[in-house]
Image (cartoon, rainbow, N blue to C red; front, side):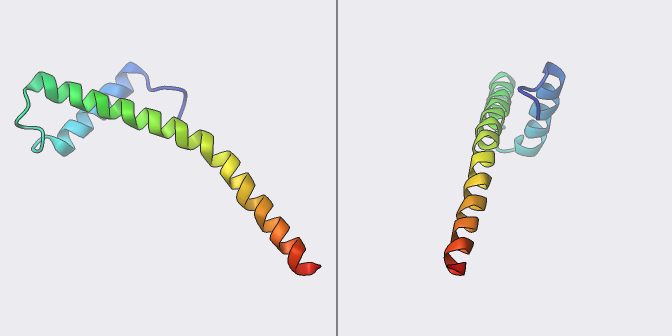
Length: 75
């Protein structure tokens, strides 16, 4: 995923969220439903960015730890 979603992609994702959670959000006004869906898109983007940044160093750590363990077993 690129840095952030463009306006069209954000709307499409918000509409999918509304379709999926529409019944649960029914007590809210249409305006608040849209606000909630947009907030969920923002949360998804933020979480995705954080996990993307963390993933690479974590994979490196696991690989390095595995190599060290392998070297210790050989010795």
